[in-house]
Length: 104
Image (cartoon, rainbow, N blue to C red; front, side, top):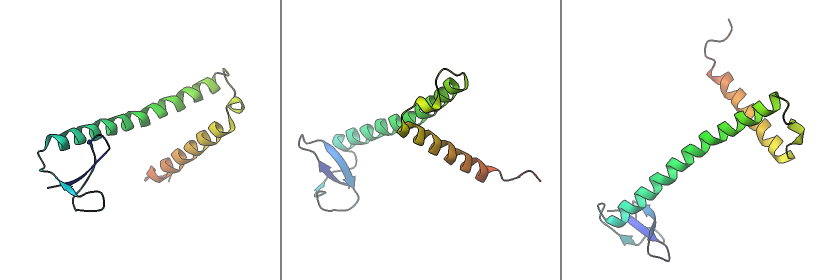
């Protein structure tokens, strides 16, 4: 049976396989409180996954606007420029690691 931590409203906010600080209450695995907690975690994970996809869409949109001359890269805030360049660099590094055959 999992140990749980509740918030001020009595809702389950975390689970643990072992008793630990803040995880003193033990509930059966089929408890409705645990089912609600797990459902909320699944919804949060789904939102995170779509956020990652949406970030890629925004990157592609910014690149398209720059390519068409609608905006200039230098018009973006410095922090946005740095983030875009870092993500492009990471993607290039990942693409290089995935090139298992090479040009030989």
